[in-house]
Structures are given as C-alpha cells and as structure tokens.
Length: 460
Image (cartoon, rainbow, N blue to C red; front, side, top):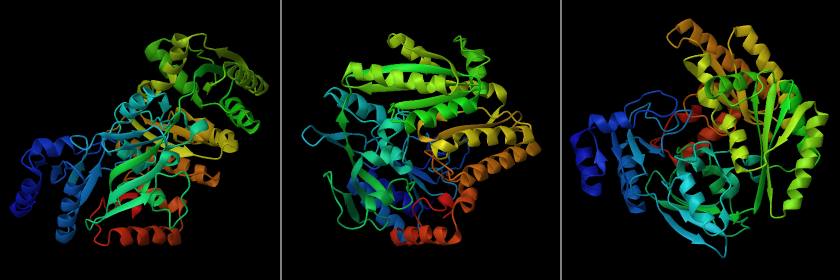
C-alpha cells in the first residue's frame, strides 16, 4: 500500500480508523477457517458517507476492499486472499437505529451483533428468529451476507426470510436501496434477494431493515433416542410431512454422542445410534402438549426407544447442552476438522447419512455428523488425525468432495448456511453448470466491473 493511499484513508477517516501496522493486519488476517491472509490495511468507516468515499477512491485506484463482519465465517468469505483492505463495521456502525413497533421491523447497522438485537426486541415482546450458532458474536451484516441459518429454521426460516430492505453502497460509491418497509413489494427486480448471500462481493451493506414477529409465550423441549441414525432421519421427515411444526429438529449421531459424553459426562446413552432434540412453541400451552404428543407418536413409530420431555428450564438446557457443545467435543477424533454444511431434501436424509458412513469407511476417517435435520442441513466433519500429514489431509479433502457429490446427487446443495467463500469455491463446478456460473459472473460484473469488491470468492 503506497503512501498516497495511506494518507488519503487517514485523512478521511482519522488516525484512529485507518490502520496499516502489522498488529492490525495480523488481527484481521484470519477467520474460523484458521487460514491466514494478511490484508494491506484495516479501515473502520464511521457512517455511510465514509463507505461512499472509500469505495469511490478504491474503484478509481483499483484497490481491493473486503467487507468483514465479526470474522466468524467457516469458508474464508472475509479473508484477503488477494490482498486489499479490510472494511470493518464493529467499531462504529454497530447501532440499532429503530424498532418500529407498529410495523414490526428493526432498522440496524451491519455491525450489530445478532444477540444484541434479539435481547433488545425481546424487551418489547418481539422476536427476531434467525439464530446462527455464532449469534453471541456474529454480526447481522455478516448474517445477511452469508444468509445464515440456525436451529430455529425448521419453523421460522432463515435470514433471507426476515430481510425486508437494505441500503447498500456500490463499488463506484453510489447508494442504492433494495426493498421496502412493506409486507408486499413486487416492483422491479428483487435486488435485495441478489445481495443476500452474495458474501460481500456485489455491494457494501450500510443499513438493514429486518422483520420482527411477536414472541411466543410458551416453549417446550424434548429428546428422542434412536437405535440408528436412519431411524432418526425417518422420524424427522415423517413428523414434518404429517403436519407437526416444531421450532427445531436437531440431531447427533453416535460419534457425536460419544464425544460429548467423553468430554462433558452428561449421561448420554453411548449405545444410541442417534438422538433428536426438538423444541415446540406457541401462545396456547395446551397446543404445545398436542404437538409433543404428535412428535412422540411419530418418533416411536420410526423406532425411538425413548421420548423424554423436559419438565423445567434446567432440564431443557441440559438437553440442549449436548447439541450446542458438540462441535468442540468431536475434536477428540483429530486435530483437523473438515467441517461442511451440506443440505438435502428432508426425505433424502436417510440416504445421505448412509452414504456418508460408506465414504467414511472407504477413506478410514471418523466422520461425526450433527445438525439441523428439520431443514435437511447436516454438518459433516471429516476428522483428520494429523493435520501435518499431507497425504492424510489430501485424502480428507477427497472424502469431502465425495460427500459433496453425494449431496448434489440427492438433489441437495454445497452449503445450507456457511456460504462458499474460498473453501468451497473449487467445488462450485459440481453444483452449477458453466452457463450458470457465467450468469453469476455477469451479475458480479454488472455490480462491480473493476472487480474490487471481495474478488475471486465463490469461484467467480
């Protein structure tokens, strides 16, 4: 980064918001992938006007800009693998601007942390449903850029279902507004829909208008124990196909159960093939009892050996502990976790888990699986025992590619919530034809003709 550029950014942002020292560059060189790419600098815009000035200058001088939320992504979507400047929002653009109680919307800046919005709207008896596992620290701008999911997606959907409108700055510095604060809007192309899940490659989000709903008054938690993972998967799609409407439907396979029990000693059944954890909610308590009875029926019909209903909040928390701490527990199987978030139609879950088990046996890896089976989203974890063994790591990625191929053959997709970034970019050709990739490249070029905004992500 030459001195002319450095002086410009320090002049418009101030010395405290434009950094080019090694400490800041290293701090913003990684995300949850544990890959490291040093950026050329780190900028903290104070407002939309700063974003406009930054992007206009970068576009004129062909400088790369990488928008970054909290750095919690699993695919390298906010890494500077081609150099460039990190654009961070956590320092200044982190405010809840409005909670509209009449129209049930919240207007926020992109740096607001997910849980902060959830806590604030809860004070008004309202609810923002998208709940990624990272909600304690991930930003809403990042959630929108990746179209984050979560454990409540079975009933309430994912981030895209709650984005009503966006303000965004194009790479040339011009501001656009996509969507409206209205329930219905069919005027023109769905530009907001294009920007959601675009991983910061088309425009920089500066303001989000998000839908809220009334918070349900009652909630219950239950757990089913199954002899096999196939039985558990059958219970998922049979329950939902017959009209049961749980908030969530999470599962752990036997490897995951054993890892959690080894690390935390929660009294889980080590001989279980799988467990399913579910919540139901609503405004009438008797309705929850009916939902639970329906779940019990379909779980037992699918082969559950036990169906346990939490009798209080502590029991509910104990049940959910296993799912929420599963990811850290499975590191007992290896020091390199190749974590993917494939998604298939729910009816294909038994075939998916059976196929993954066959791939695991073929390559000789432990592949614990857990995730959001209520929406067909499974987290597969190819566990490489020695990350320094190049041959073993290579075989690990070969196993991942076979898992991707399996998911796509079953009518599924490469990612249900983590996005593509750089980690999954090489596999885009498995999921999309060259014609479809060319169409995506043309959209990228229409928004960003100089390719300055988070370039080369998603294989584009």
